[in-house]
Structures are given as C-alpha cells and as structure tokens.
Image (cartoon, rainbow, N blue to C red; front, top):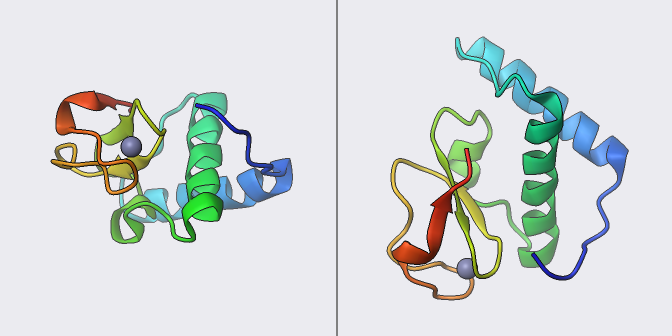
Length: 100
Ligand SMILES: [Zn+2]
C-alpha cells in the first residue's frame, strides 16, 4: 500500500475493542492474532479516512465474513466473494486477494 494515512494507536485500539465486543455478542470471535487484527482495523480506519466511509459498513462491524483486499489500492471489504470491480480503483475481481 502506498501513502501512509496517519492513524493513531488509540483509534485502532478503540475500534478493535468495539469490533471485539460486537463479535463476541454475535457468537464468534475475531482472529486470535491481535496484532494481525489490529493491522486490519488500521486498514479499515485508513479507508474510512481516505474515502470518507468505511468499507462495507453493514458488514465490517463484526467480521463474520472473509475479508478481501484490492492489491491495487488496498481497499478492504468483508463479503462472501470479492466485488466484480473495485469501487475505488476499478480493478477487476482477479486483483483481489483473500485478506482474512
Ligand atoms: Zn482497488
């Protein structure tokens, strides 16, 4: 990913805690690798800041689904399959990789 968006550690921590509590409420837990999950959260926050919205807000609050990452621009979304086209850079589905 290029261009670092500044995300503070406290933002990551608070978002992580929120996701975690929501996840547990839903009967599943987040990836046990906390550092890894926090990196993901950081990516989500970066998307939110860069694009003004959080990727797939209806789904990402709890992460029950696989997360896909656009290898071109770093866009993340949680859904069963990657989107046909990246909504940010228009890269094709094939350019997405499984992130979680
Ligand atoms: Zn993209």
